[in-house]
Amino acid sequence: MRRTLGVAMLTGIVVAAGTATGATAAASAGTADGYIVVLRADVSPSAAAEQARANGATVGHIYGHALNGYSARMSVTAAARLARDPRVLLVQPDGVVTADAQTTPTGINRADAELSPTAKINGLDERVNVDVAVIDTGVDLTHPDLNVYTAGAKNCSTGTSANDGNGHGSHVSGTIAALDNGIGVVGMAPGARVWPVRVLNNAGSGTFSDIICGIDYVTAHASEIEVANMSLGGSGSDSACGSNKDAMHEAICRSVAAGVTYVVAAGNETDNAANHVPAAYDEVITVSALADFNGAPGGGAAPTCRTDVDDTIADFSNYGADVDLMAPGVCIYSTWKGGGYNTISGTSMASPHAAGGAALYKATHPTATPSAVKSALQAAGTTNYSWPAGDPDGIQEKLLNVATF
Image 1 (cartoon, rainbow, N blue to C red):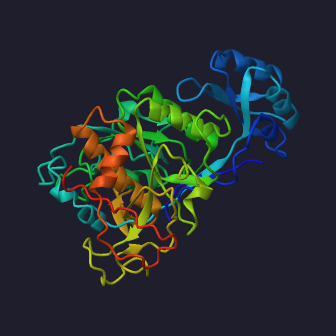
Image 2: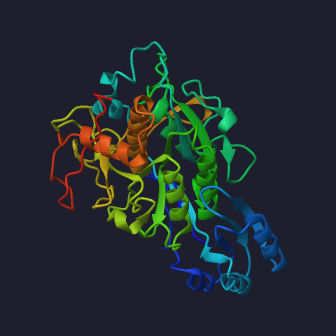
């Protein structure tokens, strides 16, 4: 049973199938041949991977920062043997993710980024001194409207480069950090250094093991990277850090503990975000999508690329108690692969608005913990949008606003 994750736009990342609840359950999971193996803290992942090879497994990624373990392809029988090894905490079937997207430049106005004293949106190409990892389909490494830190690029997916062959990751990057240089678009935190971490292929799809590879890389650079955006997701639920029931969650727990603020898409299934990961994880900032067609509150603006109702929760957006913040996510205009620009929609587009807001806060509060960043974004948010129109959960989340950041 091979599970897929994807991007979170209306053409976005989606994580499929639930996670295994333990080594035994994982090892007996149908005909899956892709697995993630989590080891005890005192076990060398390289040595354990050698034993896996002796059992006929083909080892993929080896993790040593956010997670202690490795990924491998093996038979169900081999997985069952490894699950009984006392050095192993968890053997989990791998999964696949995909990307979700929707765009419009009005989101920068609606979040009041042009009023931020840190963003300094004035056309003079003043750059916010902060580093943001985009864990996605890669980033256009030479886009003239992005400050891509190519020395920090990492490819955990197919091919040989972190360059974006899909467009989704480049779009996310522009919303976060497009340059204030008089061309194209401007991002929430203009000129922030973008670290391309490619975990999804050109079709916007990838595996849990690929994503953990990306999280592992970000964690290894936690002293340099303040914020990570994950506009991707799939089926699953929350579990406590340290319970060893979900390898991706364990990796994020440790990465957050290392100081990296994670911002993720709520998902586009019109469902409770509690049914989707990483949106369900308490340690991240989960963002739902607002439909906004003119960059201003009050409603009544005519729809553009979609028929959502202006100034209300997007009709595709996930919802629920796991959502921490709302941000514009409908008809968002941003950078694209090949040096271009595109308009798309999805919670994948809402998440980078909030990631840009987190970057602005970290630029002036460098010692703030991820939980402090989340609290600051929520405290600064407003409820100045039409509610409860279209909102199925009865909870009015704060709408992103960075005017004071």
